[in-house]
Length: 110
Length: 112
Image (tube, rainbow over all chains, first blue to last red; front, side):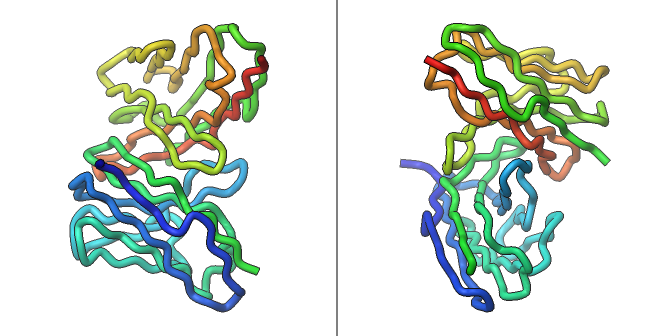
């Protein structure tokens, strides 16, 4: 059963804590992406990786970090430096321009 | 810088009507344009991808058109159903690094 999974679905954290969001894919895609979605706005790119052990900053990378040690996995860490971390986070893997999305993680920081 | 706009932000129509969703982009030098569907609190599902050399793509009751010269795409939904209620987003493939530029989406409500 091929697809892309994100966990957890909901995540609650206190301000000042780092938190890591999981993203796994078994589609054998080289490229993976992290987006942030806020109400009434389009998706904004946080980080992307086109190959294992390499990743690039997107438009809003400040306060976030990623790793890409395995082709299947692209975890995102939301650090305490991110000023407004409460949002819906979407992970995608891609073959060329065709992106396939996970179900998302809703992060609430209080 | 490429910008993608979707107007209106929300649309409500009675069941059975045919409808059109709009997407506009500022730079006609695109590789492709995609339409996605997003149900509340869920991830995105790709509906249609139109390459820059194509004028339209069809899938079931959905038809997407692309006019690069005017910077516009439309998504036509025939015989709308309550199950079509969702947010529809368009995204433009605008560079050779496979990055997508996203519109904010149109929230569609089909009233039974």
